[in-house]
Length: 539
Image 1 (cartoon, rainbow, N blue to C red):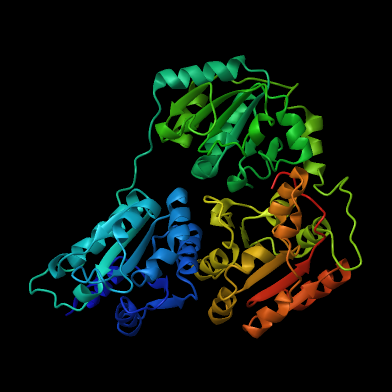
Image 2 (cartoon, rainbow, N blue to C red; image 1 turned 60 degrees about the vertical axis):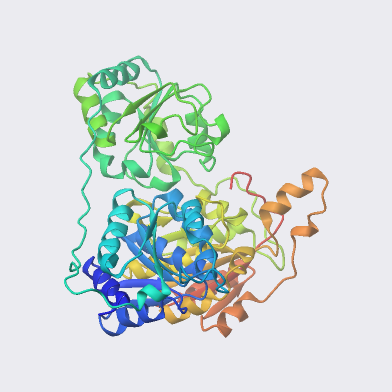
């Protein structure tokens, strides 16, 4: 048995049945062995960066450790942005990367891969001997699952062809150690209960890290007379509660924004409290903020807080409820507020106006709100266009059904993350929002979408520009034409690459397109020409 075959055995032993990647000299025989001998599904991307993004999307929607593979040199180098995104998102992911022979520093594709990996993925597991290859696979999976985050398993091309010594350890799956819930210090629990008793207008704000603790946080809110809110990444966590304000942050809706402005205490649970969550300090300017997090380094790291509690969200909420006598706050939890929240229309009062050739993006999102399947995975890419679906479209983030891979601020993420999400959760259609500029950084992945043949609707909100740059250049007196581009027929490009596509410029065309493509059973592209002068300030 050769090293690449032993690695394939070990990867499959860890429960892997899907691998994303792009073939090259250093990984093609590994991929062939995974497919032909083990029946692993190989999703072949057109770009290494996109391949790793697809694996990231797969991991985020399934909760499993994803696997991707690239060749040496430029194959790994191209994936740098995707590895950085995965690192910042703490996505469990193993990237099996080839490397040039250690004894050939003049190889045309040689570069020092270890410092590159440490600067992007953050964790590097080198395979240096045939006898350790299986062990190294186990180390990579354990690190990816327990840190968690991306790990690059580095395999030199010449080593991959060496025979594995007799008696080498057989692959054994690394079972991750499940973390025990972190119980908060009783002193911190009592201090938080005291703050809740003394507050007049408290709010409990949950992030993605608090999803398993939704019931406990609801109970604490009811006990303390607090209102509930979430970050965008936890949208829908408190759906159905009469005092759920919805998403807090720069993308908070008007009623939520007005209410939060009166808060005097905000307690966050498992939330990445950053400048956008607090809308640069404008969202709850008079509130003391207390952060509950399992990571002490995260408390106050991105935004100042009055106090912190190191503890599991559910354990902390339960402990505070146990020492807090019920508090009634009819001035804060007033029936009128509950009724207003139930009747709130995100489109009310918007000055929607479409032109002859371009639809107002807010009008299009209003159509989406009425036509898109509620049970879906929603993916929103990075750019000015993303403000509209995030602000106006209800996309529930529970059950891993909302992906917004903005960690590194990299454009071009929408389509590959959508492909990975569709492969990971084929039981749910995927609706991905992307911009024209973003799509054109990775147009070839439309071919991947066509080959995967999954129910993915890619919505292209096309303003023929880099909208964010146009918005920022003009007020400074710089000609925004630098960020504008000729109109292109992106629907024709999609069809040429095998994906059915429609172009939308008005409400009638949008409704007609939805009539044809719904229910979603395969890939589709909606090329929506939107008014470029409609600005989303809080994107």
